[in-house]
Image 1 (tube, helix red, strand yellow):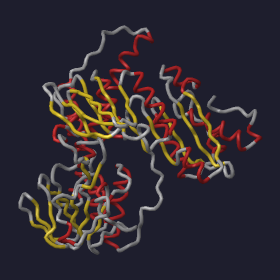
Image 2 (image 1 turned 180 degrees about the horizontal axis):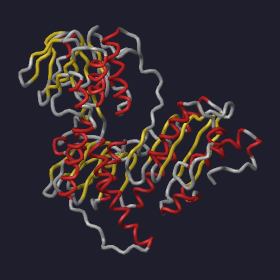
Image 3 (image 1 turned 30 degrees about the vertical axis):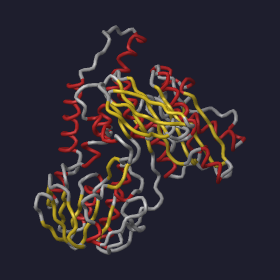
Image 4 (image 1 turned 45 degrees about the vertical axis):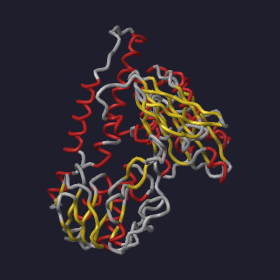
Length: 468
């Protein structure tokens, strides 16, 4: 065959589709099912559970609008059945499987871990022996494990999604995107959650104002949030669950819950691949080393997606698969380049970002910052979701949008609009003049852009907004 892709997540599916489009005889082999982590253990099931949490919240909100209902209760087993239905539908209709098969891609599922025999040959646990001129690695990532006594008593986010009942209490260690989603969802389901972050603030890659707002909202919901908590010494099994022993400033402390979920990082899933047999090198963090064209140290092996350690998000994985496959077929001609990458999380409240944080922007630019609170815009007041804000950051010299950070209802959707504006090089004054529909959540952007433009262009003072 011409091209063999290992892994059928977003990167692998995109790579297989691109190879087939270019006329390659293409084989896609995956350890489990088509769709990979994104469909079976990541954004799809997570978003389904988050939707249940949202519906519970909205049901409790109905009384404000004169709608009388009984207090909602959660049937977790029925919810899990719905998650399986959604995952099945997505795998059947949204993973491009039918399109790939129509284009002649051979797909091997449930093949177990594949390993290299040499740079052009692989074997799988199921007994497959396959050879290809070019091989693309898209085997994804896996939860990071820590060398801590008793770590075997902890769970991962995957275990959390697979629970058969809602635990009465939970420790979540690690407050990045995965950890806060686990914590937020189960807090909404009635679990008493304690969220632990070793650093000074939760969601540390977000703007500082976002971290502060999300932490405050979590605490208001009854969640215990502990930042700078210290160093974990061990985990111990108890009669009712797990105890975490940790120390800070010379003092020992402990916390107990029915379940401890570790969300302390995501590493390349290279175990069992036997990369050395193909001459594929990894970097000091354990990710597959690639150049700008996604070539590995082996000239006929490429890699894309989480296994490379690049931005580990579905859209970026898809783009990586396309780039790797194109270069595998046509030679080094395409790079990932600088991408506008909106990021969001389906917590309560939602948060999202695109571009630079305020702190990063100030390091390189003379910036203006405009903030619109959710309690001062029409649509959020109408809907009763007035907690949150939209922060827009622009370059004073050019009016160019540098970043946007949103906390609150539909934050993820709002940021997508700004991503398009940044990609299209729309200045804040131009964004402010777009007559966005009223009243909408996206209309918040026009208001924020107007406030930013007023700080840059004196003539903006006194002008009237279309979306006001």
